[in-house]
Image (tube, rainbow, N blue to C red):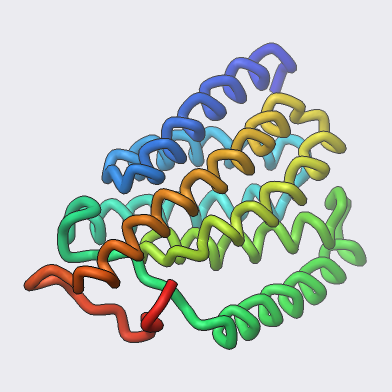
Length: 210
């Protein structure tokens, strides 16, 4: 792929990725449409620069965009049947440990069998994003905190591979993720203070306080 074409595609993907995150912060279902198109572009871009784990991750993102659209369509926006939920710290500890173990195994496999760039970091951001994307589809509050860590690591990954515009995008993601956490936490606390509306699905693991 020529540098000019790659740069043009990257610009489109970046614009749609920003749109996705802004809409997700507002719990707007159209975030998944923006995510689907942006992800399709990034699948080719990452494969072109030998970030194989990141490229493979985009296939998962495509599936999650469809799943997220389907789930949010059935339950609607912030005042409908899919409330923002939260996990206790013990469950997060298990999830983080699982991500680190998977990253070590896949990083070793990539380092020993392929020409993958930064295999361990690539693996960590990939497995972390797999878990965190699912968290977004079920509106788990802490997804934003996970994204802050993943996005910070991703900045270095993309700078190393010459995807500078995407690196700036992820720097913006860090700021937006912090804002998203505050917005979702406000909605979560409002629901906990006033009770979940009638007919809403009650999360199985929601603590009594935020």
